[in-house]
Amino acid sequence: MKIKPTNISNIARLYQQNMKSQRSNGEGAKITRQDVVEISKEGAKRSEFEGVVRSVAAEVSRNVSAETLKRLRQQVDRGEYSVSSQDIARAILTKINILNGEENE
Image 1 (cartoon, rainbow, N blue to C red):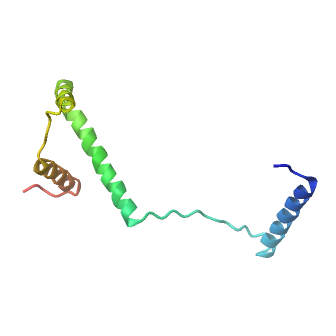
Image 2: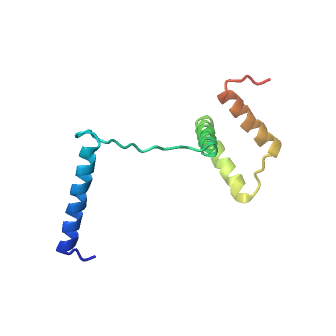
Image 3: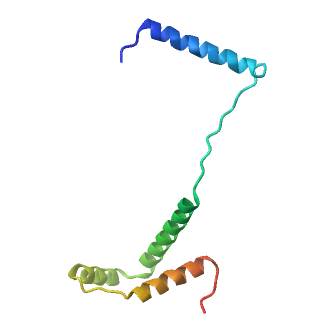
């Protein structure tokens, strides 16, 4: 983009007009503007879910030995590792209940 002297004078003129309008709004009172961030309910739920996933992953990595992880990785690579959907659901629900402060029955 080529900047011509006429463009610079227009910018300066607009700046001066803006400054005059701000002064006329309250004898030099500063106009403050704030950015506002709103998170949707869906976004909040997603964020909460991601936190649970991170928490579970951290817990698993702390409680499992390197040998066990190696064995599991080999089983997954060979296609021999499987977990029932009921076991997965039970583990997720247990973790959610623990995070919400509920006791397992």
